[in-house]
Length: 115
Image (tube, helix red, strand yellow):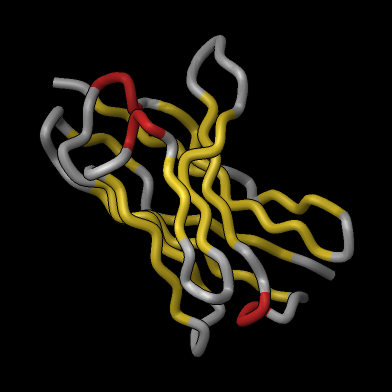
């Protein structure tokens, strides 16, 4: 079955950096578009970044120039490098893939930006 396992969240001060990882199994990773979403307190889940199999990326306006999504097909892993973090980046971050028409989600990893 499809499994997505995130790691790398934590507490960081404003202006700091974190790198999230998501290890995928049960899919043909190299042909899959991989996505990162986040959900802040009292907010709807929103798309943060997407990376297609051909390397095309898409970012939410709020993170452009600060976040970078990348992938390692040999490790079936997608990453989200987050720099210059802001308090408003505080959220649970989820890895997502759509496989055969079904959306799959990881368990989420908490990112807290606070001084």
